[in-house]
Image 1 (tube, rainbow over the protein chains, first blue to last red):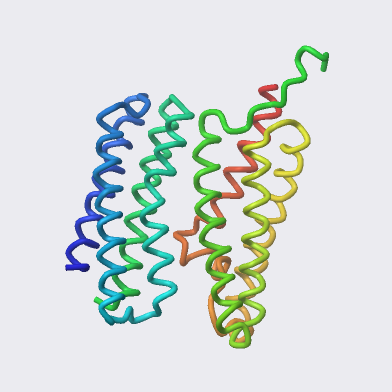
Image 2 (image 1 turned 180 degrees about the vertical axis):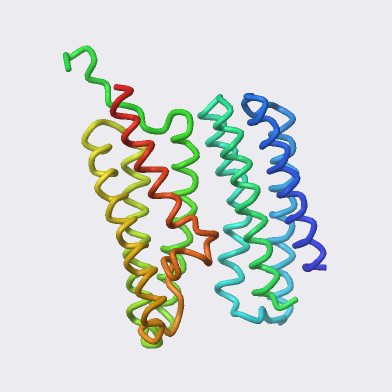
Length: 119
Length: 137
C-alpha cells in the first residue's frame, strides 16, 4: 500500500514538474489548472503521510528509523504547497520554474522515502 | 540614492524566487539532518555533523537576506555565498583526500554529490544573480 502510494506520488510529482516546466518554457506563469494539479499531488502526499503514520501506529517499522521516516513524510507533504505559494508571489515564468523544481524535489524525497521504509 | 528611491532593492524577483526556493530546501535538508544526527549519534562523526549544521546556518542566513532585500542584505548574501562556495570546495576536496575524517557524509561531501551537486551549483548561480542585481539598481 505504502509503496504503491510512494510510486504514485513520485510519478505525479514528475508529471507536475514537466507540466510546469512546459509552462515556463512557453514563458507563462502558473495558472488555475496548474494549481489544481498541485492540489492533486499535495493530496497524494497527504494520504501518504496519513497511511505512513497509520502503518507506524500498527507497529510496523521503517527500516532506517521512525524519526527520519516521519520527517521525510512531513517534508514531502509541505514541498508542493510551499512552491505553489511562491509561484503565487511571482507571476512570471520563474514562478512556474519554481513549481517544476518543487516537483523534482518531491520526486527525490519519494525515492528516499522508499529506501527509508525499506521497500 | 535619494529618499524617494530608498526602497530596498528587491532580490527575489524573477529567477531570484527559484534561488529562494532552492535555498529554502537546502535549509530544511541541512538543518533537520544535522539536528537529528547531532541529537542521536554525534560521537560517530562529530566533524561531519558539525559541518552540516554550519552549512544549514549559512543557507538560512542567505535565504533570509534574499527575502529581506536591500543593498546591505545583498552584500551580506554575497559574502555568505562566497563563503559557501569556499566551504563546498574545501570540504568536498577534504572528503576526497582524507575520507577517514568523515565516517559519515556531510551536505558538502564530494562537492554535494548526494544532493545532485546543488550545493556547488547554487552558490555559483547566486553569486551571478546578486552581482547582476547590483547592476540593475
